[in-house]
Image (tube, rainbow, N blue to C red; front, side):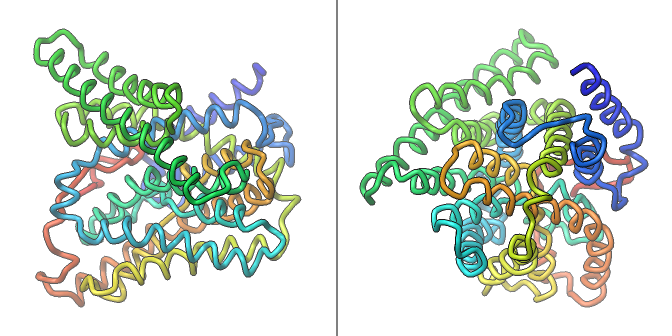
Length: 424
């Protein structure tokens, strides 16, 4: 155990020392920590011997997702999103369900032995995106700001919006409800209570924190800690009441970001420090688990589905959802590729595996293969593809093009960047 701690600590220290030097390079944080996990896993050095059913994996992954759901949502001012981000709303309202439907269809064709409910779980797990896996997609200043912000808003909200789909698909897979009315009641209970708990905690907690800060009762440090305590309170409160904690954490963050905007610096500071550490550890453990549970189970169907989830499922969903938006085909293609699968997909795959529903093990294997491919391919291509697309837009588009309209800038969830890099 002590040796595990030492090795993990050294990995975190190495990244902290090199993060600025690696910024903008193909060696992203997810690539680095997943590779370290693979190296330390049972397939190579055997320092970390973990499986997907190990409690430390599920606890860390779920805790990390709660923090990320809250902090990502808190970056989004709902009024700004509704006023300025029509393309992102298309991707969330149409693109996310379409990605699940297309992913389900591909799964039915390629994975005929997998129960339909398990195929649905697989499609849901791979629907959310994680902009941090392809940093340049949202941070490269040559990419039009509206396009970067579209990807930023989409990845900040689609992981939370996928939770209701996951909840219902899990129940269908477990055959716990058995009727349309039963699923409706389940959705109302889990999601409704989750939303209610998130609204109450986010609004009351945000107002109390602002009131305390205005009187200098709360320090800068305690405000930062208190905002994350709200995420835990929303999650735990919803679970105690029979609701979904992930929905509650996401909703609480969205309410805080909209009604208590002065707290934003504290939530973003936490996300870029402690939240970043949790994310690094999650990718490291993901690499170790992939070595233990996934590599030996790969076959051509698994690999093909993983590839198609990246090159077909999302691009088709994005193209259909952006029809009539006025965006150039090159922009639609760029947005279609710029949808890495990351932290949310890892956690949802772990949740499915822990649920023990029929086909859960294969869902984890296929989802992990797609996530691993995404970590590598999106990490390697994000910088050159962003540069190429940005140069094209500068040469071939007019200043009044849809891509160059006012973006309604919102903060990014990104690792530390060099001072020359911009997020807006």
